[in-house]
Image (cartoon, rainbow, N blue to C red; front, side):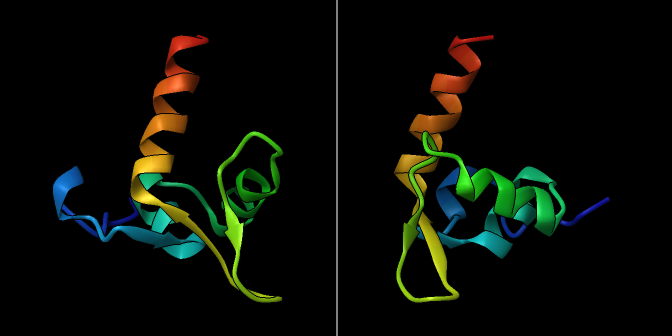
Length: 69
């Protein structure tokens, strides 16, 4: 089991890297990068090799995904 970077949502940093998202969601890195490549995922590329997502944007996206199930 992958260890989360925080015990609750409030403790997460405001900006999450792909590695952070992988740990929080319990995903592999390749699966996380597939997620970051989705057109509906609110990722921001800050350099050629660095992707980030705001904690609030991730939460909103997860809520939207949960509503569509």
